[in-house]
Image 1 (cartoon, rainbow, N blue to C red):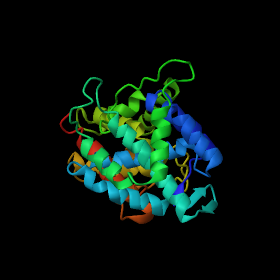
Image 2 (image 1 turned 45 degrees about the vertical axis):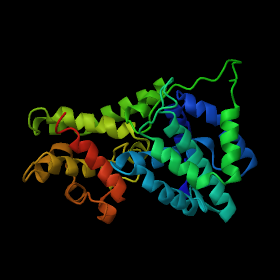
Image 3 (image 1 turned 180 degrees about the vertical axis):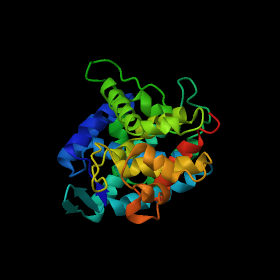
Length: 312
């Protein structure tokens, strides 16, 4: 099942993508698919492609081997669209078209890592690009979408389309695609979490508060993770405007990674008078209602962010 972005989320994520030359090149094509081919909206589709690219980025070796698995899972997920409380059943053909569209966005994103003047040289993403092409080169819908993308050579301003190189396997690429509104949204979120957890500053060891704030900046840079932190399904009695449960889940990982012993009660009391111990100790993806890090992939991504601060 694919959860389509809400109207508010769609507007917010549009700000995260609109400075990307690649997104703007695809945008009119994807909007046309939404109007004429019963496709998901362009921003939701781009968000789904970005999630798949994040999955590949988290893999350190043989990323190309993951491509067929991603494609098969996309087909299964795209059989049902979830919009709010409504679910939309879709045909096998429509699901496959959606999966192909996502793969096209992924392919051009991976190809875009090539610097101008180096088009004939090998590059780090080549194996993933080859895997996608081999998988879909006989698919007519794939061919049509790629032809539409490369056939759009003149922009709306009448000038030749120029797409600045950017490697989606590098985390900083996502930041470059954001407009000022998106960057301000991230800063507001980081500042809010910092303010709500400010009591930890006096309890942490030297330098760890700065690492804690940096963890949240990286989390908010990630499209999928910022979606989770913005959820309103907080624990009973919470007055937080962000996902309080996730904050304590991340705190649990932080405490473990930075080697704090017998610190859970101290950390909890530094932030709130309410008992949030379960969310700190039961942060693993297998812990049901105690965690918002509900899949192994998401939990490992957050853990990786926290671990990256140890040597920074």
